[in-house]
Image 1 (cartoon, rainbow, N blue to C red):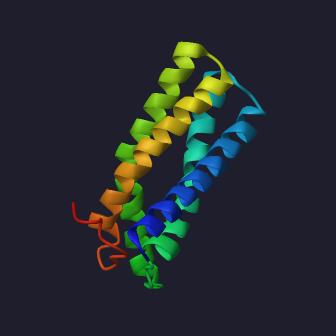
Image 2: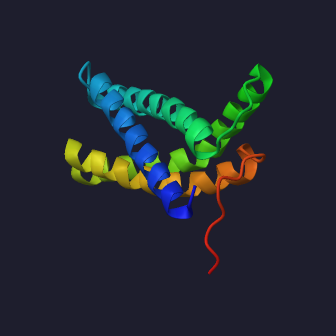
Length: 142
């Protein structure tokens, strides 16, 4: 796979996981807004987005062939840990946009911006620390 194909595929998967995340948030918020509903929506959306993105990355970005329970558990745990910092970026921007504008449209805009920045950071962390035996492509020389 070429570098440009990798970037396009990774971006498409990030968009898909973002849509899963935001759809989950909307579903949770339909049952109740307010601070508790907002917090639950963030956590639920992050969880569904995480599982979606992990599965896509494992199979279609890093082409990880390890099917063992131990290997899968270790990689998912590392993948999740690598996502903690990037989740902080996402939650921080989404929350900042919500606090500044108090509209769903701006909350989601902050979420999209935070996820976009976070996914860029996350790819590099995953490539270096999680899927260490899989090297799909290298960045083009400068």
